[in-house]
Image 1 (cartoon, rainbow, N blue to C red):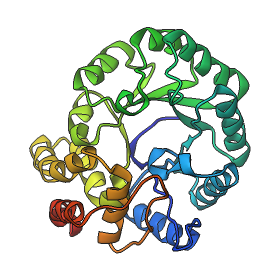
Image 2 (cartoon, rainbow, N blue to C red):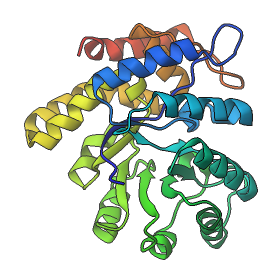
Image 3 (tube, one colour):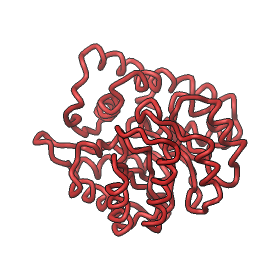
Image 4 (tube, rainbow, N blue to C red):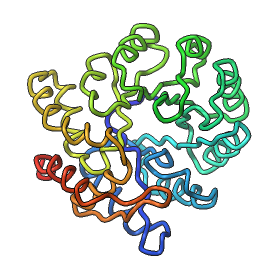
Length: 292
């Protein structure tokens, strides 16, 4: 499977009773499809999987799978703090119809590189799925080392790495070391254009929930070869992307959806609501994006 285009790391809509709002979910997915996204990535951190039961996670995965067209990429987040639970989540996702999963390092436990390699190999051995690694050390506390990637690079089922470290040098190094073996996937949204320059053909993108047209347009403009226009568009996007990276990421994404006219509710605890000042700052940054 070739990873291409903009794939939103999907939010999970909740209603006023804090239940999954599937009517809002359908409206949201329909709007994203109209904007030109190439696939779907449910049950990542943007989807608040950490606050959901296994039954709720499965309901979301089934809903998105049923909504997806045959030509749209499907990647399930199946992360958990323990290898056993990751394997269980991955096997359920496979049964639902997902052939590819996105896996960050297990949170809280901070495994060594040797333990992390054993963890990924255990998942691959237990479930017949493709694996997209997810490097996000600011959140998970552990970096996926190049030594670990060297050990996995020739496994045909390790197909990509979503690089969210925010360190451009790592993107350059991944491209140089693993081109043709492990795809570089953009995961640092405020430097997404730089990732494209360094070989990222796909972008697993939380901000695409609330600025899908702009993200897709940036991607297409770069692919067309018009680098001057791509730079101009990234400049417009940068401010909002940078504010997202400054904190309360999921809350701001959901507020951005509201600004776009699609209500997806608020986040579940422990994530709190935005202050009036936080809303005003993000709303101002979103102004040039709302009518893209």
